[in-house]
Length: 144
Image (cartoon, rainbow, N blue to C red; front, side, top):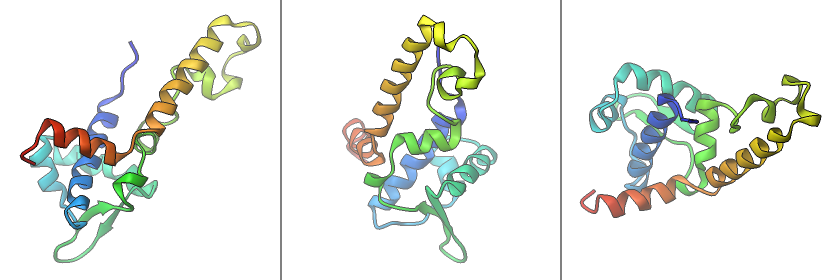
């Protein structure tokens, strides 16, 4: 079974947490609070935040009242942006992303299937924004 790593799952939860705060007036958030709210180790969050910053999905704010915030509106950040920053390209097998990976691609029947499935998955992640996740979260947790 193909599965996202903990980095991808926890990174998405971190971004959703920041999106909720962005929605409440773009408050900056310290990782210690995210750690408590999401029950994720602070050390792990410190590792996850780095590729999110490098890919310009979050920005840090220094000084009193500092912390982290989204770099742009939740509606403009796609799930594919987050997962690619944390997991790499969205493909089920290496040969879909790197045609030099395997010499059998021209004759391989399964390559076409993996390629189509990878594109479907990528399109789904590209069509889902953090704003969509906020709306799902509000339906599941109306009190937040």
